[in-house]
Image 1: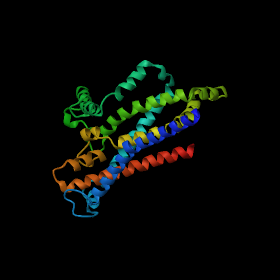
Image 2 (image 1 turned 90 degrees about the horizontal axis):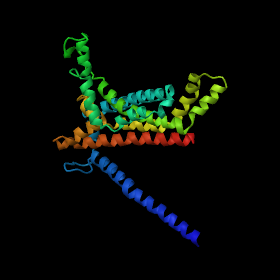
Image 3 (image 1 turned 180 degrees about the horizontal axis):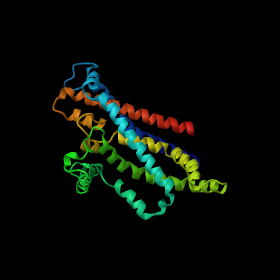
Image 4 (image 1 turned 180 degrees about the vertical axis):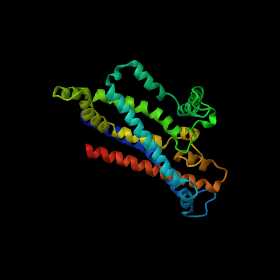
Length: 289
């Protein structure tokens, strides 16, 4: 009798948790996505003229969506590759740093720094009147700030890449250091060394694949996080092309209400991209399980 009551309470708890999940997360997300799609198609809205695809056409032709579709994933991909390469390099070269309080504190401080502060610091360092430009001036490499190359608000998005990398590298480094410990990768490397492999070869052939295998979901999440970044592209990016979040906010916040449906076009496109990324991550996980 007591066992039966325990099963009933367990089932009720599961159903209550599922209902709470639907109410708190699933329903709001479905409502937001549906509202964005309907608004972008002209089905709803204060100045709606009826169902139409002109807002999608305008977003792709003159609204900047086509350029943003190229720039945003490219920048997010470059930042993710840099962050993965640097963080895994730190772990493979010095895995013992996971026991160092100084190293952990150095990696933890950037994680507690707001993205806007990171963007401002990057601007103060890389701008024509910033720290690097002044050092170059005192070294005699440039004679005026105008000779210093544009590293912020530049066409190559160097400032955005540097700033976002500074926030992604500590996160991935801490994750891979923790993975090295929990997966006991050092024991596999020691076993390979006992069988005749060098330390560098054991870490390269055993440690690296294990880190990549266990960190693939974190890598995808890092890409999605950089894809939706707002403060850093807003402060360090150019007026055109713009990343998704900045372009969406500016389309939505403009005084011309006729262009507001384009903001919902951008939001819908972003949700589709994120959905594809999450789907690939889950499919990848199932295939490897």
